Figure (tube, helix red, strand yellow):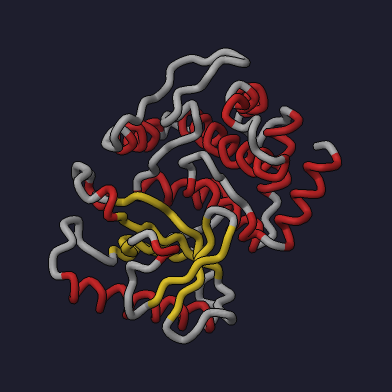
Length: 276
């Protein structure tokens, strides 16, 4: 890494919430990196060396190709500042590394399910082969956009952060029937999460949220209408009693537990909770 990249990495170690995938639809990968930063995992430094120096990540043979494959996607990063370029490369680099991990460990069905889920989003394409300097399709895997299924997200957390178990809670049904009942369950579950954090029962959590923009999307198992993953830090000391602090897009946001469709004013509804 050069000096600017090292400085950004040190900044993220102190303020993990600043990590910003920006133009890339790889929120689950950003959340995994933030969690690894919070628990001070060595995975992040190893990933930096893989993405920026071409070294092998763990025992994944083709991870030495990640640096080159990320650089081919640089056409979408050239107008961003250096910090956002670093963040974007790190998130996309983890995505590519995760793909190779699944392939080498005969878990390709997980990857295939993520591709199938991504194809439910309008205009998403895989992107095909790309050459250095060529324009990358705007909404595609090759651009850095991938919708992780529930199983894919659980596997990512285990692979990258070393979590031995990930506890799943479905907060709302796929059809969003019974809005009042949903709001009650969301509040109860997320309030319990804060209590679990206070007792240090869990180290963090991923929260999958559904968006009004995607409710016309076709159903896909427990992931129906799921549009975004955010990271929930264990330290909730600055959140009010009826609020939950979450991190995404390089900033801190809050959910009002009395009105769960409040993340950043975007109309997101908590759907799936993964406690780590």
